[in-house]
Image 1: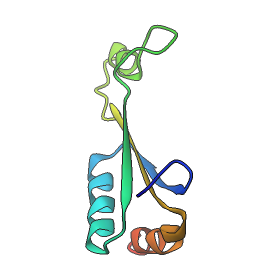
Image 2 (image 1 turned 120 degrees about the vertical axis):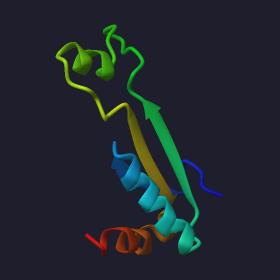
Image 3 (image 1 turned 30 degrees about the vertical axis):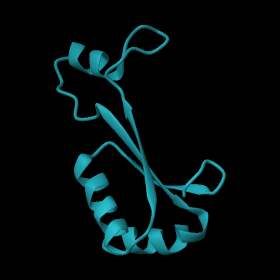
Length: 87
């Protein structure tokens, strides 16, 4: 079980394909992981979300969601090797 005390952040991305590929690699190698998704389209304390600001300039945002993938600290080095070796 992955908890806040025994995990380490493996990757942060806004790209759905990258997070899906990373999850596939981890699952194929039987490595437990936890994904945290943050929706950036909702407002911030200043009243505007990232999506609102970008769309106001006429640019379509592909950064609506932030994906953070965590693995156990003991699995981090091997996981990082697997994920980054193909790059």
